[in-house]
Image (cartoon, rainbow, N blue to C red; front, side, top):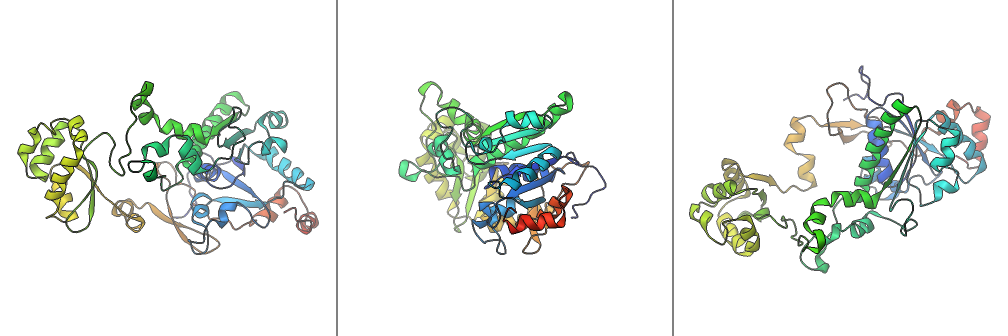
Length: 401
């Protein structure tokens, strides 16, 4: 798929300057780039976004960085040096959005608080992403994804029984949640500016983003009620709903939602229709309370079947089910292939596969440009700002860029 398109994209003509690292802000700005925004990623000279060094799993590039940084321009700039301030000011004068997830208070110390910027650039939208948000006793506290999973209660409902079996999510969900709210926050701020003519501030915290996602277990534990127990990969309050091994060593994920499905499961999957009226299992609350006994019955039934045979029975009974895929299985997923959801993007290591953004729109194609090398666009961007070749050379010699 070519990233060029004859149809306009929603954010064509919008310029985003980003002082970003790790995941939350880069994930936000990559999605803005998907919609056509020009994203100028300001990075430290020599080292750049520290996520560039997390690993070398993608043809020598870092997996996190490849995922969150396509379609951006990389500008190296040492913001601690005076000449860099003038460059950043010139960028912001032409920008529509500033996104930053620097250390708490760092942006304000550099004169990049919304209040300061709004006086100079009233049209500018400023999106601040932090661990805990501005104000409050945790404002200056360091915040990494796993720490927010802990503070936000996520670890209390994941994993197995007992604190020694708690488990983090296998991806950076606190960062992702914050990145998504920053992304939609910027979009809403752009819509608001269309009405008011002036920019506004979007303040996103990782903690609040993840706690919003914890709504079900929080309300389940309302007013001190017992919270959902840890149940591994199974559902904590609905049963059977989770992974079950088959006789060939494969595993099937299945889930029942109501009594009609329970009867169909007993009749067409377990081949034990009489089980539907067993008083131990005649309601979800009873099945959940007696899950050990029911699990033993299910495992005995599945022991003579392969995983695919179990799925065939589940499909016939119209019981929701899924394969338990590893990453290799996801790369080869037939549904993603059938819907042509893969394309390629360029990178410093050559062409790489990339998943097209979810939410396909019939009116335009998403932007799918390359992953930038560190400082790849520095000289071109400085030239756009009116700096001469000799000026640019001096900045390089002084290690400002």
